[in-house]
Image 1 (tube, one colour):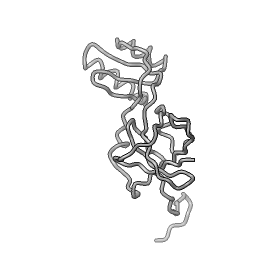
Image 2 (cartoon, one colour):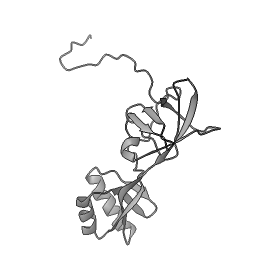
Image 3 (cartoon, rainbow, N blue to C red):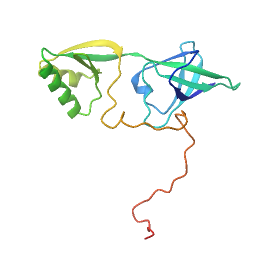
Length: 172
């Protein structure tokens, strides 16, 4: 089986495509199938999100390295549009207040299909349209501002750490 675990910026040769919905692109351990049907394992550091167009490499059972392109699958979503930027901003505020992941586009928002949120948004006078589309939500205030470097590996061998627990005696 091909094991994918190293993100790369570019590759001379891309030897496969892996189409995944957002829910699976944010998992750190995953078994999936390339568009060819070949089974792969994906191992990433917890908190890593694979984005549409990302390249990830790994090796197969014979030790051959290969690069695969990640593609965002079309998902059941709502496209939210408003008659003014202010109205769209109000919708974004109310979605954020509910900790709802949102894809921010040019003049629109996109969220996963949720009838309760649709009703709320329509109450804010938004036009909410069902669509099958790639879902690429914002990474959040703390999601994209820092990067971990492990020589390109997305899932390095963890180091042993001492975890302090309340009640442990501490040396002074």
